[in-house]
Image (cartoon, rainbow, N blue to C red; front, side, top):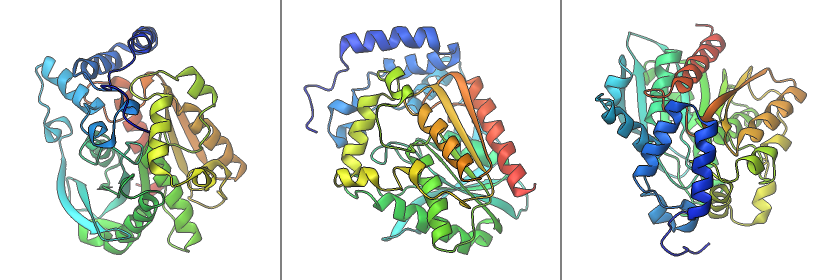
Length: 344
């Protein structure tokens, strides 16, 4: 899709979306959305990939709110007791940058392999620091957050191959990062939530040790853009229907990929992918129905699953725990579910 004009959001759509946000979003969520909007992001679906990758993120909105509140924006101040170390791990086609988050204490700790969001095209592990670091704290686990290859430079299934390779790396190297190799889980947000679920299936099919748990936060689980929540939240912020189409167009090689079970997860063979799964959704999010459909599909496959749908928040809320109360609640819930699965 070619860039359109200057990438400015459609003024009418923007006004309607803002008015809807005011009615539906919690005050603290709205503060983040307004802060991000004040940084003048372009409409991602109207620009080229290089421009899209430079746009202000929800994380930038969170940091702006923290500054307005006179608080520190340093991740180590926001989530004390967790240290972060950058490293490289083995991907499917070479080394991948990763950050290892480690809780205080001697360990060994359970391990969570975590995949960031961004539609497989934009963002990176640094943008999603809040979610990964929060999980390390709440689950008292080592979190390995991975920068998998992105489209359009590396189209489907490159990211999925890297995700599986990252899981294999964690199985083989857990002990070297204060981890317990017998307790390894998968987690991710948005596009990364899809990768977490798809990796659990791939691990099962490859005869690998199954993940102790899969945590998928507003995951992409199917490829129709006509679900109830896509229609209801077609012009929502910060994620809308047109953006998802843009991401999918950049990621897939041909329409045939849309039928691939790694994208159309709800039609995959789901039996035995993990002992338990947690799905987290936001009410003001085109991907909410993806979570509901995944819950139904997992139940049909007899996979124990719990799903929580948080009212008053939008896509990308999970990493905003520094300023959004529902994000704090969601991270605490995620941590509790992981601890339960780890038996800790």
